[in-house]
Every structure is written in structure tokens, then in C-alpha cells.
Length: 394
Ligand SMILES: [Zn+2]
Figure (cartoon, helix red, strand yellow):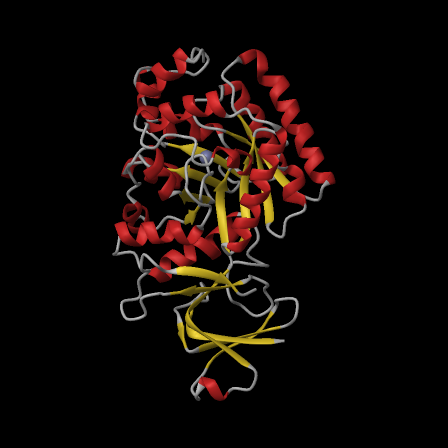
């Protein structure tokens, strides 16, 4: 049994508790949470830490299999430039790919991440995920505008789904983005997700020219992809923004994570939140700065009372896989959002999106959420400092 205390405990379900004490059993299950009125140093067997304690983080968007691309992609090229670079450099030796993704998994664990929604286009990361301490949900992502590949690629995804099942891992089959999946493929994905009540995740409005593609079949994304040989003929021109164009091709009742949302406007947010019944907006601010050098209007999502979660994206577009670093970026750019809110997005909201909130996501009796200590936290102003860092205690 351990008794752990700090200046503040952030349970995620309620406001921070000053001088709180968490009691856990040997498996990390929470037995009790109390506020100490007495001198903390006099509580028998107590470990006291300077800083704040938060539950284990949930990363709702990652691509573990791209970890070998760390530091290899030029910054600020915009999404079309990013995708063409990835196409050129993605291939590597198996051993290089596997070593890099195993290291990335270990780093995430060290960085206090306890659960991840991870994209797979290949089966490269399956074994590492099955051997990890982290709880993984794999998003088997489909990316093709070629009508001839619809059946073949969907069957491949189903094969991967079965393989993951034998490894004891959960998964779902998801579309990459509005512009990279044909209506016929959306239909297969819709039926499969609806029948199996599977989580859907899709990259959304990551660059401004994604909307242009649907409005007028023009723009930088369209031009770049056509040059790469991608045929957009099967993608219907709608005259509307991309999200509005495709959302009805996804089931409204299953949980849905829209990822990035860098160029989502108020109307997009309202229309999507009216359509989807269980909607989450995943923010990956450091990847947005890396690729597009811009950020989503995160306070607008908050004002519109949307469920927000946090993702790291991959090491192709980020310098580290650390939820704390994502939160520091949001805190620095949008100081009006409280750290209390940020912690809830990075823990409980993510756990709810991945159907794991019975187990993790908050400090509540009976849960095994993991315990992270954030040191060098500005306790006077309740803000992260640039030097704030994390030690995983459990
Ligand atoms: Zn991504």
C-alpha cells in the first residue's frame, strides 16, 4: 500500500484538492482520496511531493509506426508538403522501424501516458502494442481514392482486425481523411462501425485547402495530390466544407474522434455537434505548429461546450510524444483555459472517448488510473512553466 501526497491533487472529476492524499494498493488501485488538515509530514508512511498529481494521460491520436521518421520531415511545409515528404521517406528497414516504435512506446510510458488510440496502416506496430504496458486501441486506417482497391483494402483491414483480436488488442476500421476515402469505402466503414459499435476517428480540416477540395476541386492539397498521381474523380464535389460533406457518411451514434480541427470554423463545429451523438475533438497542437505553423481556435471549442481530447500525432510531426508538452503549448497560447480543464481533457475525456473511463482517467476509488507528478509547476498562478516536467509515480 502507498500513500502519496502533493501540494495539489487534480482528480479530473472535481476541482483540485489542496494537500490531498491518495491511498493505493499494490496493484495501483485507488483505495481512498482525502484532504489533509493535519501536518502532512506527520502522516505515517506518507510520500510527499512538491508539485501537482494528475491521473495517467490518454493520448487519443498517435501513429506509432511512423516513429522512425523523427527529425526527418521539414517543418512548416503545410499538410500537402508534409504528406508528399512522408510518401518519399516512409520506407525503411524493418529493424529501423521496429526499434524506433518500441522506443516511442517506452517513451510514452515514461511520459505518463497510460492509454493510446494509435493509427495503423501496416501491421508493423502490432506486436509492440501487445507487449506494452500501455493500453492500446488500434485504428486500422484506410487511405485510397482508387475504386478498384475498395474491396481489397477493406478485406486487408478486417484481416488485421482479426490478428489484433488474437493478440488481445481492440481495434476499429477508420477512414484517413475526408479527401482520401471514396463514398463506396465510407459505406463499408459505416456498416462495419455501426454493426460492431466501433469507435471512429478521422483526420479533420488539418489544412485550409481541405475545404477548397470539396468546395471547388482546387487548392494546394488538390494540386499536390494530383501531382502525386491521386485521382480525385471518385470524390464528389459538394460545394461545402469537407466535414459537412462527409459526416453523414459516418454513423452518428458511435463514438467519433475528429482529429486536428485546425481550420474548423464555428459553423463546422455546430453542424458536427448536432449530427454526432458522441463527438470528441482531438487537439494535437505541437503537430499543428510543426506542419502548418498554426493552431485550432481551441477556446472556441470550449465556449461551444465541446468534448476535447489531446493527441501527440506521430514523431514525423512532433519532437516528442508527450501529452504534458501538448498541454504546455495550449497553456502558453491560450492562457484563459485553466490547467484544471486541460488536465480533464488529457485524462477523463480521453478515457471516455476510448471507453476506458471505468478503469482509468480520474482519481476515483476503485480505478487504476496511474499517478503522474508534475514538477516545477507554477503553484502561485496555477500555470505550467516552460521547465515543468513529469515523473511517473505509478
Ligand atoms: Zn495523424
